[in-house]
Amino acid sequence: MQILLLGGIGEAVRLARGLTPDHGVIYSIAGKGRRPELPGPVRSGGFGGSAGLATFLREQGIERLIDATHPYAAQMSRNAVQAARLTGVSLWVYRRLPWRPESGDDWRFAADWPELLAAVQTFQRPLFTIGLEPLRQAAAIPPHQHWLARCLEAKAPNSPQLTILGATGPFTLEAELALLRDWRIDVLVAKNSGGDAVAAKLEAARQLQIPVILLERPALPAADREFATVDAMLAAFQENGGFGEP
Ligand code: NAP
Image 1 (cartoon, helix red, strand yellow):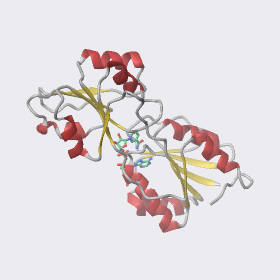
Image 2: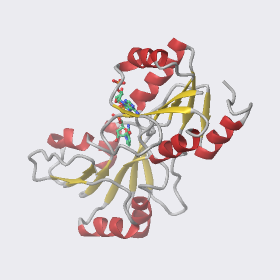
Image 3: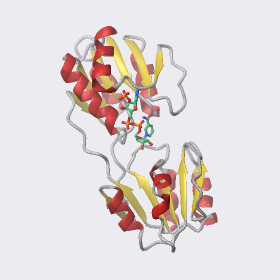
Image 4: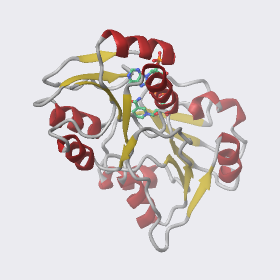
């Protein structure tokens, strides 16, 4: 089967490796992060919206589209649903389970950026681990706050109240504990990404009894099939003589 796999996270690479012996897999990344080493072709950069993706699916003779993007890559996931509809190609989605609080955790949830800003108001030294949005909001930092923002790119706007840390995970628990202590962080702001790669910050916040504010996941339209683990999707491909259900 010819597969286009929309990737960008570690489990997508595992999926590509698991499917490659039996299928032709084109692995696609947005192009901002690392380019993985895979046995099959790796393409980088956008398709030009859902119409561009539909054209790509037709031109490459793709029989199955797999969306294994980050749970917050909402635009790509919406484009995938639309392109699948336009072409009739079946769409399978891998989506990690969200993190859940443990007993004693002080976790709060925000639906969007305004809710998140309101929830941060009562704190002085938040650590943001939600990408570039805090950099765009630098002008809105209240006088009583200093923001530490960890993201892939470290382009710092001019603000004495905002420090940018350019860093790529995974991060160890020891490093996360040191970061929270060294910067005297009093609240952690994160996406509910799920998975293990960047979960150490939550354990560090737990140990230091620092509250966590989580930006909720974007709502996404349904696909033909959805899987919460890589193994479950690989097993589904083994059904029906290796081709799985449509
Ligand atoms: P997005 O907002 O959903 O995507 C924006 C555009 O980037 C898409 O419309 C598409 O362009 C292109 N694109 C995204 N993923 C692609 C892929 N796998 N292959 C080809 N093109 C792709 O997603 P994002 O800007 O990448 O990220 C949104 C959020 O998710 C951010 O907060 C980011 O921190 C988080 N995140 C993303 C990734 C990732 O690998 N994408 C990894 C970790 C975290 P066209 O419309 O032109 O096709």
